[in-house]
Image (cartoon, rainbow, N blue to C red; front, side):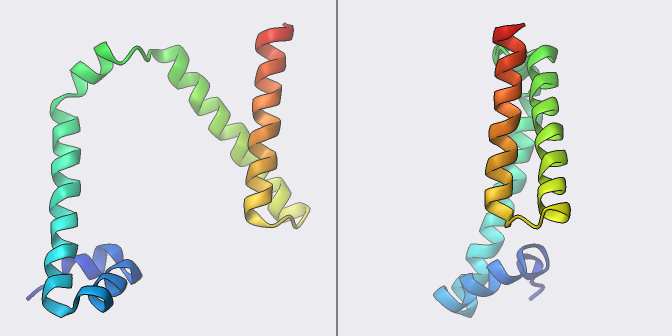
Length: 108
C-alpha cells in the first residue's frame, strides 16, 4: 500500500500509527487526507456564497493582511535581532500591532 499520509503529515502520521497500529493508523491518516480534500472542494464550490454572505470585503481583508505583515515583521526583528523566545516574541508583536491599529483607528 502506498502511504500518502506519511508523505503529507510526516511525524504526525507516525504518531497516529503508534496510537492505532499500522492498519487503522493508515486508514485514519488517509481519512484525514480525504476529509481535507473534501473540505477544500466544498469551500471552492461555495466560494461565491462565502464571498457575498460573509460580510467581509476588501477593506477587512486588507486590514487582516496588514496586521499579519506588521506582526511578522516585528516577530522577525524580535527573534533574530533581539533573541526573544518564539512565543513571547509573537505575543509582543501581535500586541504592539493591535495597539498601533487601535491608535490609528480611535485616536486618528
